[in-house]
Image 1 (tube, rainbow, N blue to C red):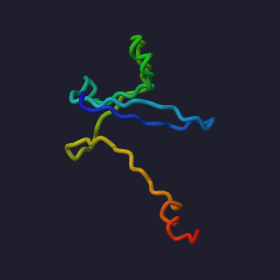
Image 2 (cartoon, rainbow, N blue to C red):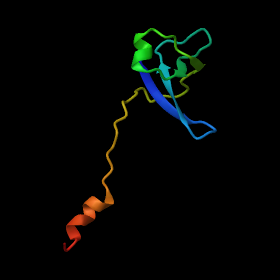
Image 3 (tube, one colour):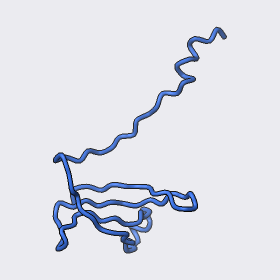
Image 4 (cartoon, one colour):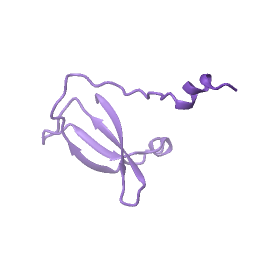
Length: 87
């Protein structure tokens, strides 16, 4: 397996459902190398519960690398304007 990813999809009732994507280096008999399944908790994985598969797919374009996404912290507007206040 070369990469794992996560995706959240908003359902019709407004709740977000989390899914895991597995991107493999090898293709199956149908030319697919991506599997999507419902996200599991650590406890579910440790208990050996089977994954609930949603579907399969394939990578159709790549630049040759996959990077880990890092969370970017946003600077709040109040933090930058506090220095200008006279009190």
